[in-house]
Image 1 (cartoon, rainbow, N blue to C red):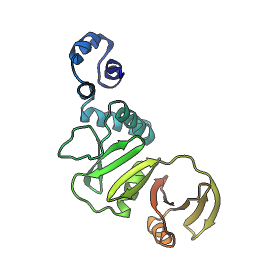
Image 2: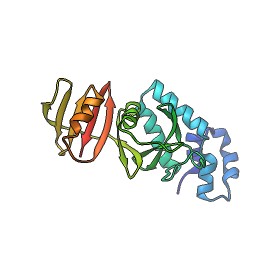
Image 3: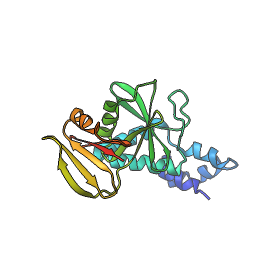
Image 4: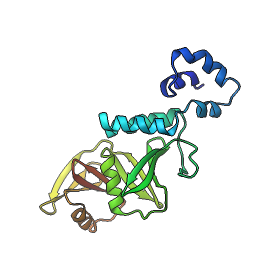
Length: 207
């Protein structure tokens, strides 16, 4: 059984002095109602995410939000700005409002406030914000997942700025300093594309 008081102390801003109050406050309510009551408001979640992102790392920020989503059941398969039932992280991409939540464990979802075209430039922009994630489009939706372990088994230079790496798991990775050149070279390969960007280096995985 979920220890709601422990979660409230961990995430909800309560202290050990509030335990008796919490016990009475949560009494008689369903587990889902209790989770809703101890979940911090969106402004608090966003502020802590931003602080971790700036002072520690993007990875620390997403790790916090992933754990929060798991323990407080914030997973959301149909996120929306108009009906914010569960907190999500607000992002500004290409000057427009987007949100970030977890759809399920380990699977992040990026969604827009208004209908937007999913361009390769947008996917690379998201990848720049989250360099430890692979960004991809599926069924008209944008998703993210952890990069995971990688082993490069061979490297070929396609141009002065772009390399083709073969990974041990069979994937190909195009790597270079020019997104435009990378995308041009990628036209020679078929397969699902995953976008990544780290230290000003653009990467395109082909599975």
